[in-house]
Image (cartoon, rainbow over all chains, first blue to last red; front, side, top):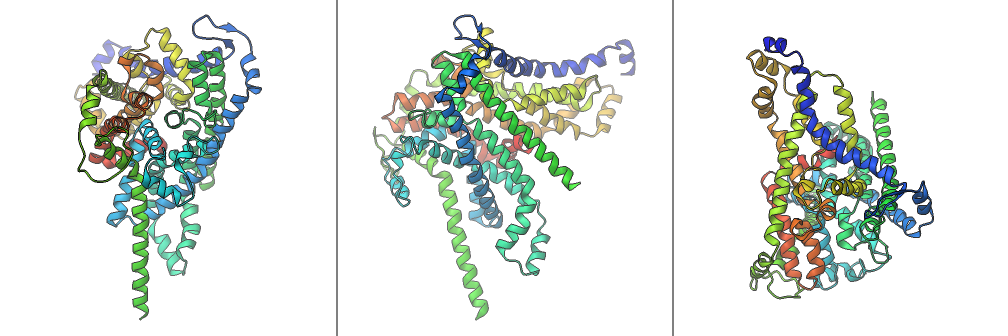
Length: 299
Length: 276
């Protein structure tokens, strides 16, 4: 080996670059290339068929007065506000409950099946839930009837469409958060709870004074994951409502998609996507900041 | 007397939590139960859900496989997912190896640069990605569906796993006269099997369930994948619930079967991305 190195002094230095070249090429072409292309082309009038024409910030100025864009932005943020708190609270509560019952057969079964919606394609979840909510299935009608809800009205009504999409999203990803919170919960030493019990603390007290504070870093992670995934939601919406009725469930991704592939206005569509990108980056930076602060607080 | 009360209380609590557990189980699987049951119904436009299997038939499955392009959709989905896994594991483990075990100029900087691309979700760049693919003349090709699948996340996972491989083993192999590639195949890969499996599952399910990118990149019928076929079916055969559900079942089965067999690994693989 040593001899080899002496013979080809360059070989050892070139090899690592060869190993990282394929993935670098892929990511630079598709991801970096796309980001740069998106930024440049968002300043042009571009309908894919003809050459792009530079027109300054016209697309971005137009966004400000585009009622549909404002609505899509509101819907996107609305979906986050709808999903994140419920997803987090339900996720933590269900995880605590499942961890407490983890030695029972039913607990094990529930822990396994709650993950099934996560593995299925969003397209499957969307199509099946659309069928379930079509108002023709008696057992579903009866169940929703208990809460005074008519399922057939949920997806077709502009007031409830987005909320329904949010609920299906929460159902779909619950198992994911259960896995994350469960691993956080199992990392809390049993001795803490035993000591609290000796001191006469009840279950609620234990939850609030031990579980929640110790699970905080995991909860913060869960909140950010939930935010990122709800900002990007597309497949579910496409298959549940298609963005309707009357754009009631059109988010920024859906709106950009329909602007590009429906109206052929690619330059404008990329301006929409870039706004969403800025929001996502802001969330990511906030996450990094909070996670960092968290670790520096501890040390 | 007091202990009796405590037992009663405990028993009641156990029954109550049992009921809640059953509630969670039903909420998780009911839509899938419905999907399966409806796919075995023969009558068109039957929405009634009954749990008897008396009138069940495989008619919907016969019908769906008789559709012109259905075999093609299945092939496309399988081919893209399998090729995607091979490509991802290949390029990511190779890069992970270089980043973890090799000293070269810019190691950290290039790694960080690649990791930065994880901040960019597909949903945000799908339009320029379409334009690049179109520019390359790759629309409606397998290349377009497969090549964008590997991510920096895969590199991250592989690098992490390879960092755990003891330096001594690598040095020992080197003294024995192994070159870099032999060390990679003979020493590193066998030791990071479980991470490779987790990344494979993660990639397979991601590619199999992928929707937005194929929707954009495959405009021709013969290049569509199963989730697209399912989505189209919803509009095409809106009245034929059984047929749509049979398609949904076929879509659902591969990830589900994987999950049943390698549950732990599966959860690890699927949630890896969040555990950064």
